[in-house]
Length: 479
Ligand code: ZN
Image 1 (tube, rainbow, N blue to C red):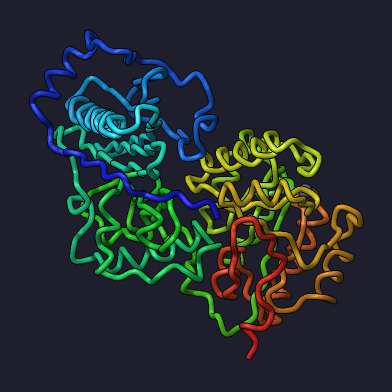
Image 2: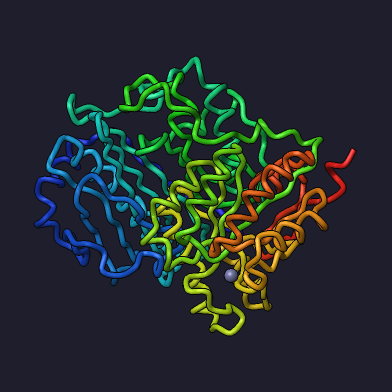
């Protein structure tokens, strides 16, 4: 477990200081080694830090503050849109930047070699059929000799009334308990490997809702992992779909209350009954929608381990899988055998795939399946470094070999037991046919068909970054 500790206190003024307003108006003439200029990031942001991933920019154009020479290396991107929100957003950014410089300068009075690095990145959302836009700023300040400070700030904008919305302008405060219950479920789905450590949230955790954003499909909650799991650090962003919290919303986000919750929900699983996880590798493909049709018809979920370079051309399919409640995890960028790659190439395969999945689904996957199920020490170390857990399987249907629906069906039925993780490939019509037969038969035999996240949550398996899991705990759920 890579532990990033937090000690530096960044005091961030959230109000708009008149002084900073003046600076904003005249910042083009600001004199220092710092360059302020607007441009699209020229390098993939992940080369700076896995924390920094710009996934969605629907509001504003990118403005960059770069200081690549000073004792504080700074790379900050934030949005500008020539409206009322620019000055407060800039004021916040500038305050973080200036506070970081002040910190470094203070530390350098005792040790002049001390250097720091400040990275801030943003996502922005613009809602259709509503006046709302949201900006999510995330980043970190790393200082030699000190510990990493995470930086999180959201701005929610009503573009019509030109006002900002805080959490309790968006949510009905009397519904806090209900919202936090939903957040509990989403945390388990977002970080299944932590599921046994995650607390069940209640109103005493209301501070977790400090940074929320109005996203396209739901409210994003951005928090520090250490706030929910002691000893774990970093930021975590989860999305609570609108359909799940519609009754707690004070704003009209332009969706109808008729929409059903987009996920069956963790609560509907009975942990005392057996469960298995169907998993599909190497997609998305032309067959993936047919698999989803079957899963949706029976209201069950599965897990898709996708190839990164296939996601773009079937991004809607990947989004649909996630929105209907299935897990979407990575299976490398191009199906290279990870154990034959350099560590740099290996890391790139995992990060690029995770990033494009996040772009498709809004959920950053901290889990993957190694290609061919193969790992070596380098794969294990990098998974640990990136906080990624690995999931192989306990039943291999060999569907790629037989390409025969009856053989695939029989292979599973002859072997299946509680907590199995079953490997298929959503690449063949024979697999689709087998799934069409297997889903009703498994349900008839009393199995709940769950995602990997759900299986881990209910099996109580201690999932840890860098560890390969092959099945849920077979014994926990048996009466
Ligand atoms: Zn594969």
